[in-house]
Length: 318
Image (tube, rainbow, N blue to C red; front, side):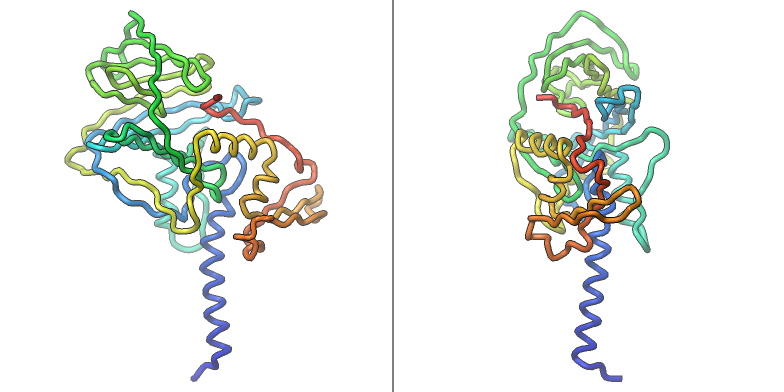
């Protein structure tokens, strides 16, 4: 049977629509307030091979108004010859599961109090700089570089033991929080969880003085023979938003202070609905780059939440 040109054009258009629908659906389902993560539309490339894998547990409070609600994440610090990579193991598991999944997309869920933080952090030894990927939503993945700031640590005479390693205590004010850390000189690495570094040994435990963020080392593994790659995300749809750390923090703050306006700027159309779910108003995005996909890039917001602020508790306060 010979198909007409019009029929062929219709089939191609429909196939393209389906492909875009599923790829955009991944973004739509995950672009929610308080839900962070590297988007499923990313691919990765290897930068180095790691020889040491350090595992930290993280307990943290993400909502400044819910101080009794403590979330958990598992962080990995990979040490390579030229690059160090700090990331969420739970988020990476979620990304991998979604990539491998067949059929309709289903977001990966975690039991209990697990909530992954989705940032990736790289330290390039030769250049003495840090590259950070941090999302506000999955439609806006920011990338910034910063010089590695010298933290002014005060090393005390207090000692302790973590994972059988003898540790010393140090304190410092860093990025708006008072930190207490325990480091071991038995592992002479200037490294630790998150952005904490600058001591003559690996930081095994770190907590701010209010215990809103608590990292503790729960495992150290020599992986030289496994040749685990140190990977970095590569956009396959859209671009990273290149910025400074201050610009990222401003975007993060604006999102939580007025997330509707932030979503509009990111390319969403917003349907303002009443308590019965009926649309009261449609606010179209001013972002013309994504305007043609407004059917798929849309969110519903209850009228009572139109100007609502979302409380949050970032690890960096300044």
